[in-house]
Each structure stands twice: as C-alpha cells, then as structure tokens.
Length: 508
Image (cartoon, rainbow, N blue to C red):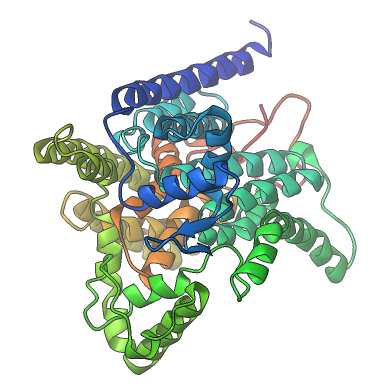
C-alpha cells in the first residue's frame, strides 16, 4: 500500500460521512416539507426572507399597513434564505435544504478535524463524523427555520479552517478565511464574533508545522507576529459585517453591529420575575413610551443593567437556572415540530424524540469526560512535583465523578462545567491538544458564559453539539506518540507525544 493510501482512504471516509449526513437530513426534509410551516422565530425569519426576496429589504409590514426598517433579528439567516427564495421560490422547503447542506458540511468538518487529531486511525474520525451525522438533535432540527443549526455548522467549519491555518503557519491568508467564516456566523448569531480571536489563537498554538524553527527577534517583534493573525481574523469578520452595520447606522437611528435585541435579551434574564429561561418581556415603565425599535432596545438594556447593579445577588442567583435551561435538556427539534404541527408530530412524539436525544447527548458528554480525564503527557523538560501531581489527580477524580453523576442525573449542566474544569486541569498540555478539542471547549465555554448573562434555552446548546460530538470520539483515540508526516521532523524541543488522546494535529 502506498504512503498516500491511508490519507486517500480517510478522504473517502469523509465523503461517505458527508453523504450519510446529507442523506439523513434530506430524508427529514422530504418528510417535513409541506407538513411543518415556520413557527416561533422561524415565522419572522420566513417573512423577512420573503420581503428580501421581493426586493423590499429588511423591512417589516405592520398590521395597519405601515412599513418600517427593522433589525431586531440578525440579518444573516433571513438574508441567506431570502437570496435562495429569490432564485428558487419563497417556500420553507428551500430553507430546509440549506439547513441540510450546512449540517452535512458540519459533519464533514468534524471528520476532517478528527482525522488530524487521530491520523493513525480511520475508526476515530469515522466515529466523530457519524456522531454528528446521526445526532438526533441535529438532524431532526433540519426542518426548523431557526439559526442554531446553521450557526453550529458555520462555527465547526471555522474550526476546520483554523486547523488548516495551523498547518500553514506563518502564512496569514488562512486567518483571513477564518475571519470570513466568523463574519458570516456573526451575521447569523452576533455572539459568534467572540470566538473569532479564540479560534485564531488556537490556530497559533500547538507544535510548529513541519519542524519550523522558532521565531526570532525581540519580545515586541514576537508579540507583533503573534498578534497579526488574530487581528487579521477579527478585522476580516468585522469587514463582512461592516455594510450591514453601516445600514443600521443610517436606517435604525442608532449604530448596531448586527441586530438590536441585546437589550431585550438582557432584560429577559434580569427581571424580578425571571425564571432563567425565555419569558415574555415585562416592559419597564421607563420604556413604555419609547416606540423606536433601536431606542426601545437601548432602553431595555439600560433598565436591565440598572436592575443588575441594584440586585447583583438575585441576578447571579439565576445563573444555575439559566445553565440548566440551556444544557439539561435540549429537545429543540421535538419542540419545534410539535409547535409547528401538533397533528403531524404529537406530544408523545415530542417526548419520544426528546428521550432519544437526551440519551445520545448524555453519552456524548460521558465520552467527552473520559477524554478530559486522561492524564496529559508531560512535555520534555517539564518539572515534576509529587505533591502537585497528587493534588491534580485528586481534583481530576473529583471532577470526573461529579461530571459522571451529573450526566446520569437531571442536571447535565453541572457535567458540562465539570468537563471544562477537567480540561483546564490539563494546564499547558491543553495548548498541545488537537484543535478539535480546543474548539469544542471554546464553543462550550462561550455558550455557557453567554447564556449565564442573558437567559437559557435548550436550543442554544445546539451550537456546541457538532464539535462536542467530535470531542467525544477522541475518547476512543490511542493516547501516545504519533510521528509527524514523513519528511517533517519535529522542531527542536517540541513535544512529539500526543496529549489528551491526539497527535498534535499533524497534517496528513
């Protein structure tokens, strides 16, 4: 067998994973088309897309016939399906097909990331891709005209691009591509922008590709070289958003990067009657006479911040409930299908799908905990300390036990926090972990932090599920040394060992 045969076989596996994911999602679309009209936020995305397709822009037609410019919902998703509506017709099935294609691309991206993480194995990448392709919470959400699945796919593709950028350091062009992907993701879900510099830093971490020499120069020169890719990534993302930001400044009487609903969402999670989950907004007295869309959102934001400043304990006390609403039980697919057409998808169907999805997601969480609990490989020259190692071992056992107990109980959110804690115990070894691992943990941490501040809902966790599923597959990866590709000796002083069940992301 030639040296290229294993890589060619993994590429064929990737094609099979993409085909599997697409086939499953297309089957769901064929079943759902015509049965499940847009509902919840999907109703608004569909109507805005119709207006965009008709050349009316992002505007809203009110019942009294008044048309106003709008920016309450992010423009990315209705803009994308509006463009497709203009070409193919304004039917929800068109949006479902877009969801299916992006979901399948996310499964392929996870397979490719896992191939870098476990280059000696075909089974581990195949498992990673299959977990995404067959994730019931992801593929059953394909008919939903909602943004979470699309955002998850875009962020996963950005992680794939980050692995490509890591392999091609010190080239800057790949970082611009990461930024373009995050720009698109930000237009769909604004908080995705927070991950752009994180993914750029992940691309800069890990062993130097191909035995590249250490960069020379003074501290300032080295810092500038490391900052340039991060700044380029963020600048490219902002450049994608810039035309829409300029539109908002002109049309909304107030500049906004993407949308004007941050104040609304902050107030929902900072209200005396808040439960930590979504609830109808309680309009404060100070905002009752404010009717401008952007002005009302700004008023809501001011009132929310005032409440937080006056009642910090009550607001912080809601954090566990917000995280529970986000991570304990997703059930987004069943919720959407039942809300859209209860006759076609009954309450019993919703419960059954929710049960299957929950078992699947808890299994993924358990496997991810196993991966994170592995003893990291020590870098050459790292100091040894028996007392420190004993303390870390005890902390690792305690967090693993807590995470497993939470995964098998109601409050899975504790297990996800334990997963983050276990990963942090790896210390600097985490920087040498496969990019798939770093990206999954970053998205999980960002999701938890965002919804601890605002409010929680199970569908928001969907953004993290593709990468977390890939991370779970790494629990089956062999821990140990995997040599880099032929002709690319390790850099002097670089660790060849593959901590945390990976290979240091060597290029195939």
